[in-house]
Image (cartoon, rainbow, N blue to C red; front, side, top):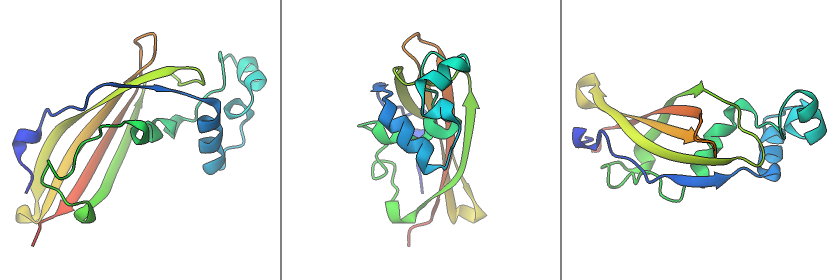
Length: 147
């Protein structure tokens, strides 16, 4: 299945500029209507320095990382992997204009059902331009044993 030697593997850190349009599109896609996610004046009136990103926006940050974990190097086939769990740990809000630096780490690998199912636990860590943690995203993937 998946080698335990993968535990501790990390992706390189990568900076992502948070732009107004990416936040606006995400907020619209999740049917958000709160103006703090669309309008800078509403965001400032609510005490934010700029347009606020919705809480789960952090998940999209992974899509901008140019060097995510290579499933093939982990011994996984994409057609045998399912997203099993997602958890967010929030430290500070993300705003338009922030530069978010992200990197990922494999934190655990284990099996269940006599090795028929393999699990990979990954965390993505994000800090802003002030070096403050903004979010940690914990992802669990499950894959069935290859025939």
